[in-house]
Length: 411
Image (cartoon, rainbow, N blue to C red; front, side, top):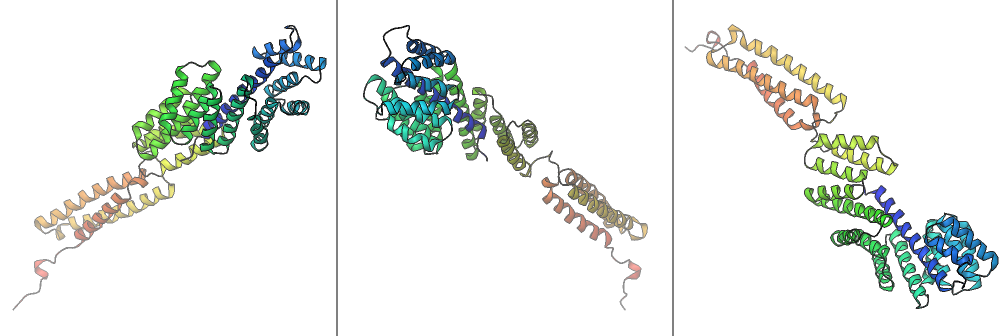
């Protein structure tokens, strides 16, 4: 069965959201460490605006601070942070490179260069500067930078499906500096490694802590992803009740069509193929992405091919072949039974039994062929049995013992 493309894309988006949070915290941390004394200085006011989420105002203030002092590495770094936050990655990179030219040991700039590349989807270029950021000094700011670097390295490893390495990075990041983002990434990595029970339990613990509206969206997305994956795992093992519970929990955490597809697959495995086909057909028509449409189409054909669907639409040629074959068979049987029923051919109870048997067999075969006409995949064995029995009855009805007057006489 196809995996959840939509939810995996959502998971990657959540991962990048985590990068953004750690990126801003790193910028503010460095800013707080080296802020000029006057609270009215544009640099300090820029930090306040950045903390309040007013990126446009912060960017203008940091730009003013850089004009006052073009060598202010903290202002340059935080100005780059604003550019990354607004998606101006090409503008952020030269600023961060300038920071490193002014101070090659400015590990926050290394971290943010790696984050800049991560946001652009280039994990290969992101990894070297992110590794350098691990060498941040053991100060309060340095610990935050190191924790963020380890977290981002975990994201890079997870994107490459190196989940064991990702788990190790997230654990080191949590040791360096505890954060909800790291706990969330660690829980999701556990699920990716197949440890769904522990991963989902951790996600539920995070959700219960009410980490804030923005973070809750990420938690719910990860919960939906984890429940869907565990549901698919349980479905493959035949645990239909467990799979149904997980797909329902996935849709509760975050309404998504993949969990609905999972519920349809559970219905199919339980024998409710008509409902499954109807649900999958609706999802196919409303597919928001090509990935979803592909997954739904695959599973729709799979359910139809199970050979258990009363409402399946058989191939037209098969239906008409059954109709033609049944019509020929009934014409032959009608002729043979009428022949057996003529007065000259009846032989007492034996002859009457042949006629009665022919009529009953014809009616029974008619029922089987009618069933086969509307649902050919469901009736191949019964059709063959009915055909065989009917042929035997036709042969029996055709055969008539010779009359007494025609039997040879002995001397």
